[in-house]
Length: 196
Length: 252
Image (tube, rainbow over all chains, first blue to last red; front, side, top):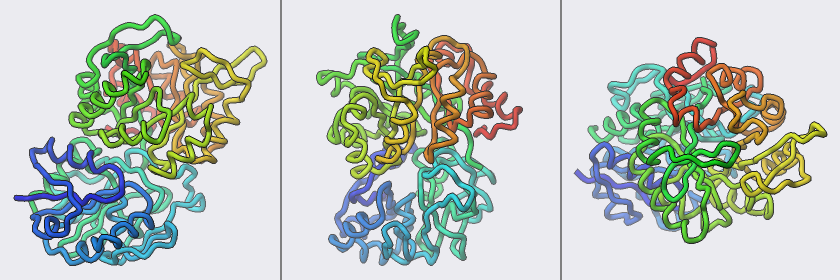
């Protein structure tokens, strides 16, 4: 069993690696296409800005590599957003795996603090990713942009408006929250992904 | 619903946890990694580590400690103390810190906030402000761990820092810190209702009612405390249970 974490110009990669170690799973951090293609599980993490990250991926052809992966892939936070079609963040065209759109929270939604920082619930859970996770469990979020609700939504949450806490299509999964920082609930979700 | 955060703070000196009373008379309160793990298990929402002896020689000790913490705990944590540059921050983030806090260096060189926000994103840039209410009734910014007074008003500096890209404000009232008489509700409220970023209130927590007040009356997004938790006068679970009874959203 081989798990890789895609290395690119985004933050929190170490945190994901350490979280996997805590659940007894070793992983390699790499931007080598061959190693990514041959892994059993791929994690696409990220904290950062969408256009900078997409440019970096394109320059290394990692965008093509990611969309053609056949094994389970888990995008986290910016990773998940990059797997969507388009992000409002600097008007960036993304990977297009999920049809959901990425928009910025606005005060119009009744939200006066942006980014959302802290623990919020995950609701309407429908995926093997959430086996053993109770409805309304708390996960840790840090983000200013969110994915709309859509056909690929497998968990929802609410911050001013309802949006996708997690997405799933074929072998691709994405979570807006940070499982690597979400205490026991996050560890269970990572274990579930590794067990897919 | 987004919950209010409870954040134990660990002041670090030479790799050990200490807590100053009014920033003086430091007492030893244990091993940081051990304490951090206990807090994470008990349901703390986040942790803050402030290195109060951050000098150049000590920086390596700090990054080693940060690395050890990142391996052991499964909740987010912020590291602060003596951070001066983009390079300092890079080392801490690479070792697994989720956020960093800047204080004196940012005040002296405000562009540092812009540089950090651009390089790492606002979400990991916490501006720490030590503030004191003077006899004229105004809250002023203090530097160097509360030793140096400035003529800048706390609110003005907070607003400028947010405009420059700070993602959160960690506000410590020196009048309240160490007194256990409650948080400074007025200045906390002024910042909370006026600024578009989360405010972490710090200084003065003496009992669970103080936390309820800072959330309900001052609209703080998070509350930070040290000695009350270290010396087990109040545990995180009993605090959260109480806040929940008061209809304050917390992660249980």
